[in-house]
Length: 334
Length: 163
Image (cartoon, rainbow over all chains, first blue to last red; front, top):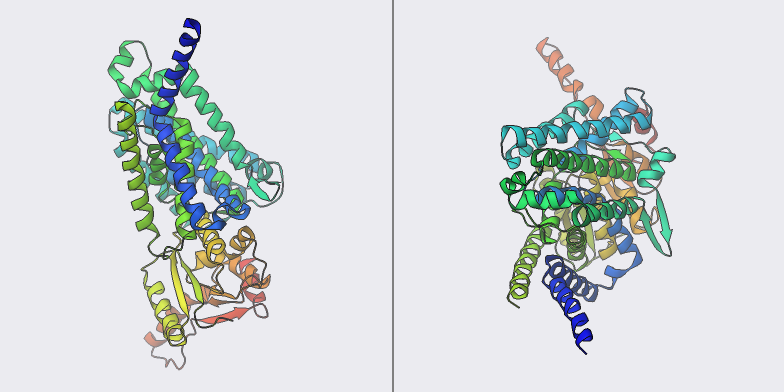
């Protein structure tokens, strides 16, 4: 009897901590949202609609993974949308105008992303300027560079069948559903990010830096190095997502990724990661990405007028955030 | 092709831009008396976002026709139809045609007709005429800045893009 009671205790504790977790509130909200849209329009859960939703979602989701880690460490990156646009543009210019091999061009694109991330990280940590301002400036520099080197023209992307197209933007069918390989990238990178944030020492460091940087440094955490690498990782993931997108739609545009930075931050925060740092959840970010994509898709399906989409998206996100905060408060009280 | 009560899909990348306002005014002057409705949809400028939003709209509304109010949205029609499972020619589509993708879509039957603005000539023709005027020579003709092309007249445009 006593042993059974003792076994019950940790199970109850685990259940209670799960219910109190921010990602649980987000999941509840997502389920409600999916149910509402599914009832409102039968097309919402159709294989065609789900396939279309899942074509675009992983590209934003991949950027959101990097942003989650960075936000957990207490920093922003507003240049991700611009990097998403610049990386494939550089790759295509190298291939089309420079005569480079596609593999070499992709590598050069990723190296450029590393450089952008490193510059962001070094300025934020070594000069001590807010990441909001640094990455806002970087957004302008990177977007301007993309427009300048293309003279504003979109580039025809690489659409020859081959290893890299299959690797980044190949498609496959599961029954009547059609998915892209970007989904595998998103799943694989999500698992890696979950491991880092929940089970690796690095994850503890990231959370500690975001909670109290000085205390973390006092305990020997290399805060600056961790932040610089997180800026690099975020930038690389944004560039990778941009390349995946460019291959999928066969076009590299200098204006691709416009506004993604705010969309991605919304996904991360709606999922339960604290905007102020110290608390991050990859599962929550996945839920947040699904939620934002469902909202954007659902409002079209339920027949909102074409010029009123943003009103509804804004109101629903605000309502979700309020509901999230209330659920969190109730969970904390209980 | 469209009848009273139908709602035509009008995607645009920059809602509020002068071209969107004037095109919508023109469309309204024809459609309103006939009782045909239309829905201007803000698709944004991001290419992947345009495709996602237009595909969502197609799946949700199954519109009877599309008038693409800008070049970016017109250039996305083929990918949108592929995503929404709509075969070429199933519904009438017209729109702006100053892009290779749109010209290819006209050729393959996804778009019935597209507007050509002679973009390669519009820049230097007025300058040439002004040069003539400055030299005191008479200018006795207008510059055409607009025409429609369809599958039967798309080849010169595709050749221009493939140069």
